[in-house]
Length: 157
Image 1 (cartoon, rainbow, N blue to C red):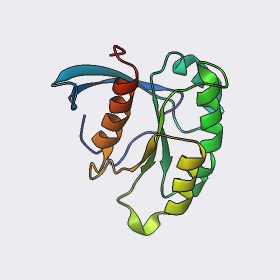
Image 2 (cartoon, rainbow, N blue to C red):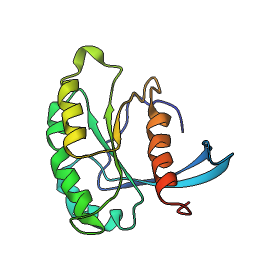
Image 3 (tube, one colour):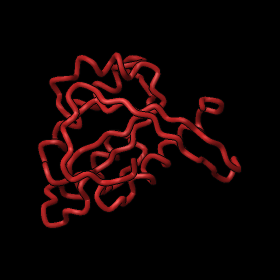
């Protein structure tokens, strides 16, 4: 909706929504892309459903809460699930790491150096710090992933 809601309910299982994106880059003047986005929730207890929802995925945004270090620690498990979900161990699903709640500077518990090391170690597309409250980098992160997918998979959209 593009509006910040301070009191949200945690995703239980999965959430589903679509996003229409007006896309353009140096090779494409303007194209409307409909994205199908699955929110698999942050609870590792729902890992058994990841494979079903990742089948045929063109990319993944992997989120963690900058104010809760434990969510960063669980990223290894989520990466393993993503890599094994669709094409086996050699899956090449592009993954972009996204740290949330960047507006809460005084409460951030995940050191930037650890985040950069994680991105490099796992050969991720990159990293964005976002804030749903301020809107910081929210669209930029999605557009970055879409741009990569568009450039490497002609005709996927």
